[in-house]
Length: 372
Image 1 (cartoon, one colour):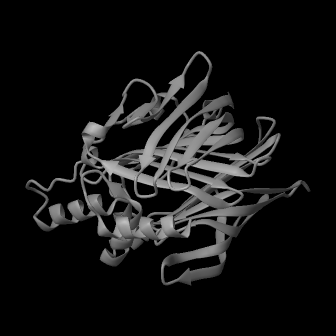
Image 2 (spheres, rainbow, N blue to C red):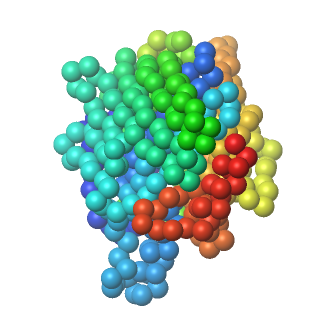
Image 3 (cartoon, one colour):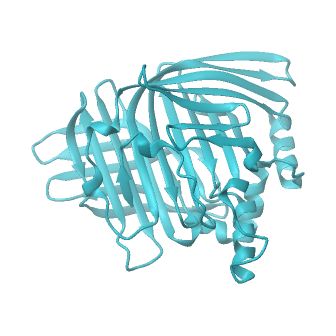
């Protein structure tokens, strides 16, 4: 994994390789109002069953022909909103290049009417949303601002890159002050609700030249924020036994480094698995001769066949006697699950592919609309 903190690397890389991917990720938590949100823009949507099917077909045809899996033909936008730990919005739409725009010069991406851009003068990211969910009879509009009181560029993380890898991580903003408003109109109930947001946020950016499901075995990552302490961790294991796992932990207090390390022993405990959920560990520990960092996944927020999102407890012990206990967000990804045609069929139930009438998507949303 190659690491960067440069805003320049937060611009679009316009990758051309078959099966390549790129995404810009924002999440935020408002503890006082018990709200959280996630917004992601994709160019080369690595979890799309349509993209993976196209890649597999291209490989089966000898890696030539009209089925070339062009990332620009699989762009997407994803938005999740949670209130009091309950899902309010779970939206993913995928489409061709005509729905997407970006810039190689500065951080910016747009999918239909949903966009983000970097305001250099104010040192902030502005996120604007405007989309409809016909399957749920809902419409969402809003504007959220991520103000970077401190950004990743203050830290030189290049020395923590290692391994011959085609994957890259840009830690743009480990911490941001977030404020704004999300408006949700429910057409079934003829009800409009406004969610005022004031909290802490995080922004990073990932891209790679290989399909994730062909190279990465497991991927855990997470973060926690308090008034003056911030924690970010990353754990990736690869399918190739010759490639060492990538581990990374950063903790700051009042923007001063407490921990910045990638040399740990990893232990996993409390193995969990069910028919529709990939194998994952309920507790993770990163340790060396100076640090012990424990992660416990407490509550599932988003549970799927290849991706999980949790409310988690973090415990950081430093050998000088310091100890921190925080609540935060953790995520888990098992890209290999997507190799299953059955799982790809399940994933279609959550993705609105522009111009495609999916029975799975319509049925899934009909059921949830009825339950609401």
